[in-house]
Length: 283
Image 1 (spheres, rainbow, N blue to C red):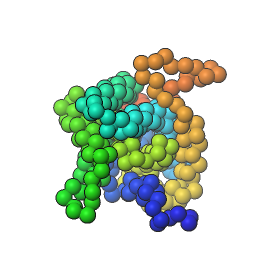
Image 2: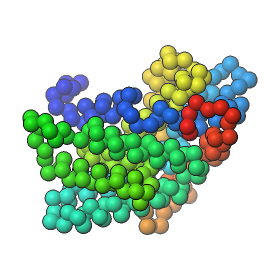
Image 3: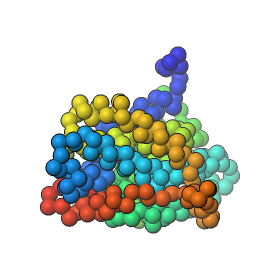
Image 4: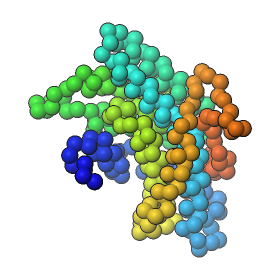
């Protein structure tokens, strides 16, 4: 605790990124929770708290296994680009970076099994890049702030990536954009992965409150006492996984060593979101 307030830039960035008011699009996505309730998995029982926890546990597990490898690889690609950003071949560095990011984006698009999840992921992804451009990039007109070479390079990289998404040249999925954002802000990969998984769980609790499945006080209790071990366990399980783009995915002790979807029921329920007669969330 002695370092708090004495220049711990990464901790300060994590506090900013964890702000629930950030305009990242998560407010309109329930990650299948609304469909879960509509299809009767929360009805006929007074134990909504346990049902919600069970949903979050399964959702966090499958999201960790399917999305975090993409966050890690996107983070690695951008950090490598930043390290070489001051080289003579600036254009070549940027082009190679966009190609690597596009390969990750295309693979995530292929591995995401339903159109509802794809739609939400793209919406939230481009919102993150807009957040960097408008909220986290250095204030160019503020005389007291001196732009560094890193600031300039990262601004070009993120701005061009967002432009390519708008042109529909790349997909712009949330895990890839989160990796790009946190690398641009110089957040370490482990903290980026852990925070991303925590924010996924927190968004589910927020959705549960809006759906009146649980109350705000119960949500806060779960966040403090229940969610942390769920997030920590899944983070430890997958933090070493990578996507291996263009390479053969190996097997370790009979387990597929790469991204995978582990909760088919959740995928089916999420894919049926648009079939509900009335909806609070867009996805």
